[in-house]
Image (cartoon, rainbow, N blue to C red):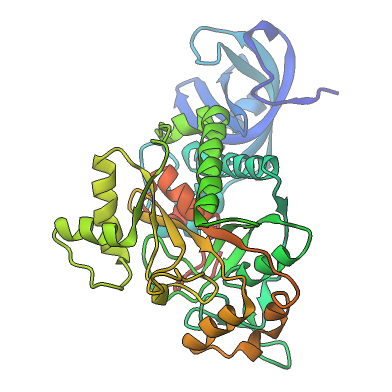
Amino acid sequence: MISTHTTEQITPNMDGQTIRIAGRVYSKRVLGKLIFLKIRDPQGKAQVTIKKNREPEEAFETAENLTQESIVSIKGKVRKTDQTKQGYEVTPTEISVINEAGTPLPLELEKGIESELDTRLNQRSIDLRKPEKAAIFKVRNTMLKGIRKTMEKRGFTEIHTPKVVKEGAEGGATLFPVKYFKEEAYLAQSPQLFKQMMMATEFNRVYEVGEYFRAEKMNTSRHTSEFTGWDLEMAYINNQEEVMDVLEETIIEALHYTQKNSREDLEKLGVTLKKPKTPFKRITYEKAREIISEEGKKIPKGMDLGTEGEKVLGETMQREGHDLYFIKEYPSKEKPFYIMRNEEEPQYSYSFDLDYRGIEIASGGQREHRPKEVKKNMKQQGLNPSDFEYYLNSFEYGMPPHGGMGAGFDRIIQQLLELPNIREAILFPRDLKRLKP
């Protein structure tokens, strides 16, 4: 019995050996009495050359009728040649059709021919047969490995918090209700309240990578209803700058890890990862407003910078060589109740955003650890502290100063790979119009 080889295992030095390969029919060319097949597996491609009257008649007839993307198993001999990129070809004695693909294909797989994004997402299992599309998710996997390795090295423990909750951490406008329980329940918007509760335990440094949900009404290139979040929380901090330091270090190390371990996939995508300028530039919210105003767009004092403001700021930062930069000390009213207010200037908060070429990818700050102040902030934002009893209880018995951040991992990948739409960075995106596949 001949075991199946991957294309990666076959070399020109195997000249004359009988082997078996299995994979998809990537392409077929018929030139009279010659048929050339390119067979693709996850490791690469191999050329199969069938010559009439040289190979068995049955093999030639089967090859003639093959459709693109059909799954085949081929038994044949390796022949050394300088006519192929791999340095060999396979001449078959047997071609078995395992699964015949329908024709025509619902989207084009030829390199350089791009189908509409909706078509690609509707046919995701075919779309990801294109090496450059699959490369997005291989890079994504590597970047996530780099983040996890860096987090663990810095003493963070990975946790997993509930995805069905009683209250929202980010406000009610984007909550997804769950109709199952006898009382109101929602899909989690973030792990915020739970990771803060962990600061009252012996786990002083935690992080989580998980799926979160926002009933977003915005159908933009950077918003979806379900997204992958990367969060961290750390205790015994002096200020939000310490959280910013950890976030910056992790991003830098993860980028280096990705650059080192995803060279081939980055090449397929035509992306060159530059080492970001360090330290990341840090500007205040008021300075950001000033820069944006100088560029001709006015941001009312105390208001969020908004998508257009962030874009203008990003262009300015890039001209100065900063792809990644922090904006800190946002107005308190623009931040959630758990962010600590500046005691000297309470209209501002100990908060920050990390932007990547004009798009916010992370938000965080120092948390309010004093129970009276947390309750006061809740009331100011129209929330009833009694609805958060389980959360507030962890503050009553010794909560240390702490801070953290939440990042949109899909946005990181979108910006890293310069993708025009965040949906390209998500396997099966969910939004206002998309619930399948």
